[in-house]
Amino acid sequence: MDVGRTWHRILRMAMPTFEWLGEKPADSDEWERVVREELHDPIGGLEVAIEQVANGWRVLKARSGGAAVVTPSAIGTLPVAPPRTDERERVTRALREAGKPVID
Image 1 (cartoon, rainbow, N blue to C red):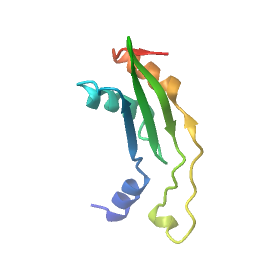
Image 2 (cartoon, rainbow, N blue to C red):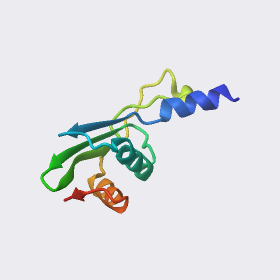
Image 3 (cartoon, rainbow, N blue to C red):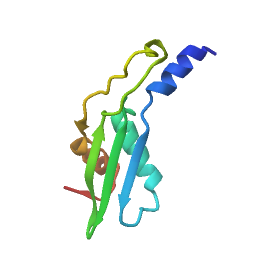
């Protein structure tokens, strides 16, 4: 096992956060999996907020990037945060394709 590569991968992985506004659906783990797979665990973090509405769910926020990432080769240097990217459209589409009741 290459420890350097393992640490490099761990340090570069996103730390996704999901905020559910309203009661979480019973299959929320599946929703979160769909989002992570669509965005491929982006470097620099992932923040998603999903709101329960009368006839389904709405993706209020889906932003990737913005969190500074340090790799072992960059230790001792200032970390650089990737730019924030609005991913709402991609997340909404991916959830719909997975059969989730998501509205615009």
